[in-house]
Image (cartoon, rainbow, N blue to C red; front, top):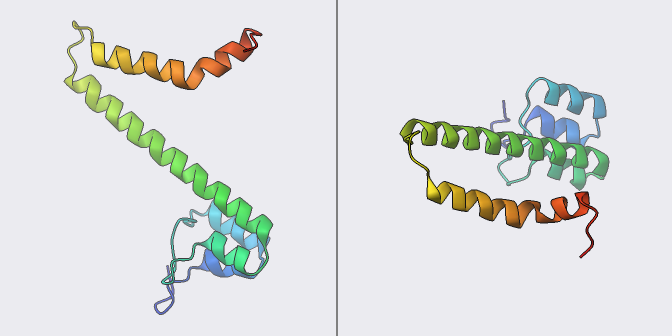
Length: 119
């Protein structure tokens, strides 16, 4: 629920006043750290504006976690759609190519350090 005039939420007010316990409780109850007030400020912005950088960091982290979860949901939905459309008796060469490319670009450094390889 947001204030009619400003669009401020209880999470924004708690963050701006440095109320650590209330921020934690509101997040635990499902308050949305991504919501913006009418001036475009997030709850983390409110905390930073009033010097509560540790609360801002907590809210940034909560927002990042929500973004990560949304991305995972999108990926799961895409995978389900792919599985429904794909013929299990055929090899999807595009998928194989994209997977190999992803492994090379995103996991090469991890695999190299795990095997003790330098550079």
